[in-house]
Amino acid sequence: MRTIIVLSVFATAFANTAFAAGDYKFGWMTGQLPGTEIIAANIVREPAFSGDKEEQSQAMDKAKSALENDYCKKRGGEFVADPGLIVFDKGINEWMVGGICR
Image 1 (cartoon, rainbow, N blue to C red):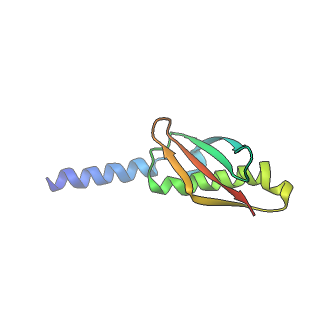
Image 2 (image 1 turned 135 degrees about the vertical axis):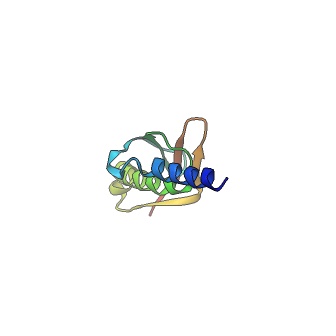
């Protein structure tokens, strides 16, 4: 039993480190909720996100960069994520990150 657990942990660790950060391909769409200051980005990745909490920081970094370029730079601010607007969609394996420019 111990051998199975150790092999399982090793296989999981290996799978999670098989791709260096530079080996991922990201895609995103940005948008603004009409009539509000809320902006958001849908972030996808290849290989696909699995919903692990560690992936959230990757998605937030990409969202911050995309949203600042698309919205906040024009306004002279930076993107600030709202923790209540950070969601993983299991159906399409994407992170949705929302917030405002400050």
